Amino acid sequence: MKNLLQLIENDSKLTAEQLAVMLDTDVAEVKESIKAFEDQGIILAYKTIIDWDKTDREYVTALIELKVAPQRDKGFERIAEKIYNYPEVQSVYLMSGSYDLAVILEGHTMKEVAYFVAKKLAPLESIVSTATHFVLRKYKDEGVIFDNIEIDERGNCI
Image (cartoon, rainbow, N blue to C red; front, side):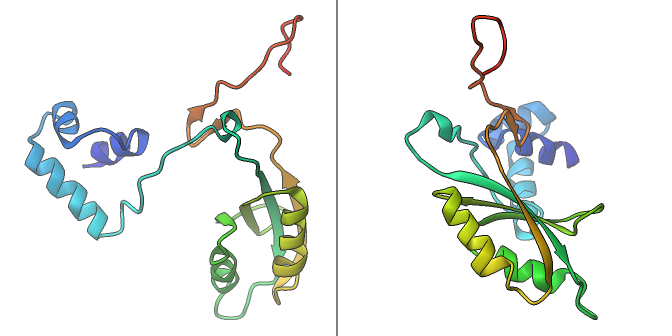
């Protein structure tokens, strides 16, 4: 039921009844499939995307590039596991190209993120180098377009 997974990924608020209609199947089959996907670890979580810029929550998001010396017989798995277990870390990706791991994390301030990189990430045994990039504005995230784009009097985005 690949189509079921795509529908849930695009909108996890859809009910089993709505999904059954969209897939031209019965509700019980949809519920059974969802339960099986959850039990097998195919569906890992249901997530809500929030435009935090429209709230009073203050935080910064950073993308950190890591060059890593892979460990014998463990590759990048062991260092990735150490990193993703930090609560500040939102995502960790193994990358191709000029760096090995991409880490997305959130902090209350740029200083807090810098401290995390300097005191927790950089000292890890396998880390060769880091490069930190701060997200200034989100235009699209997880396929969702944010409507917080402001236009000046000349029609330019600000």
